[in-house]
Length: 81
Image (cartoon, rainbow, N blue to C red; front, side, top):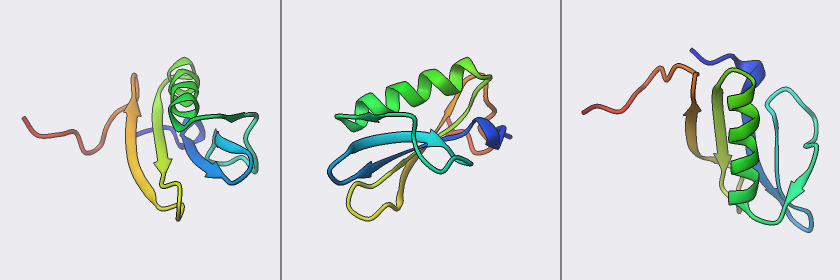
């Protein structure tokens, strides 16, 4: 199971760009011009802090689009095969 305190969420804010923040935080430390930039930064932070989940939301409605386990986190639902 991931350590929720290390999990990060990547989301879009109109007029600001893409942010990533700890799931317990109220705002990101920084905004990025692209989703990929925000995701890459989140992966680095989570990996450096012992692993966990990076959650990516949809640009238009904020729904979760994807969750990725970053090593050395433990994926509770690993892909089959």
